Length: 312
Image 1 (cartoon, helix red, strand yellow):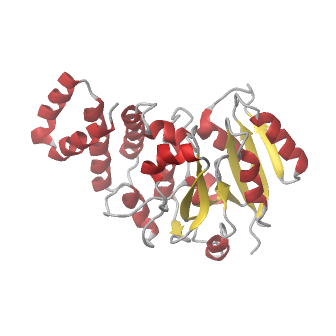
Image 2 (image 1 turned 90 degrees about the horizontal axis):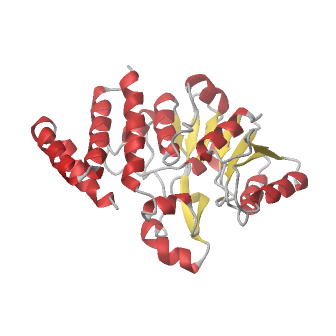
Image 3 (image 1 turned 120 degrees about the horizontal axis):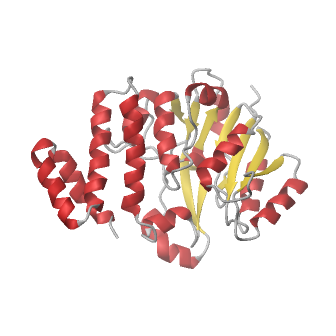
């Protein structure tokens, strides 16, 4: 089977890195197109994207109709809607694929039951300053799921309900487009400016059968520099607890409407939402919440006390 993969790259403030990302995707014959979604960058990224689209036949450039910044979620949605491939893969503009990126996918997707494949993400520090600032977050470890799990275990695994499960990321995920559009009512949530990928992966892992690919070595590399969106959150330039409250509220609203989700998963998500609310509440309200739940649901309190560590 000859795969036709559309690679969706949202581009914001990444003029230094996007050419490397694009060329890393174009190395694969299976990649039929690279869709650049320029998201109102303040730097020279738009011109760089224009140059790449002129240079490579397989590169297509898009912007939002108003030419403004809409965030990575809505940008990825625009890319998906304009894609022509049978499979969708994602790549951040400051990351890049390795030569083994689709080795597992080419075999696994021969089975129609396989609707998505995930792998492992490595890390590279683009500058010494970035390494000094962010090594404590990423170190040199793989971001990966630690062993091969059945698709039904992927959602509870991501929710930390199976112990040491690990993580996979959008960059290391490939999805069968037909299954995505048929089974998912809404794609990325545009109103989530942070953790929109996490919310999407939770829903995706419930509705689609996702299988493990290469887990013991990187298939894609996260490029770490001073202006990564994720590093801004994790280094508290943005209040991480407040963004996580919004994330877990979104997830909680979703599971409460989904009759097929097991009650244990719903309870776990309610507790996670409560825990971040407790962690981010003002002191007086925090103690009122602790007293309220100390008998009603002790596990919410225990998680909430732990999550206070995420506060500014």
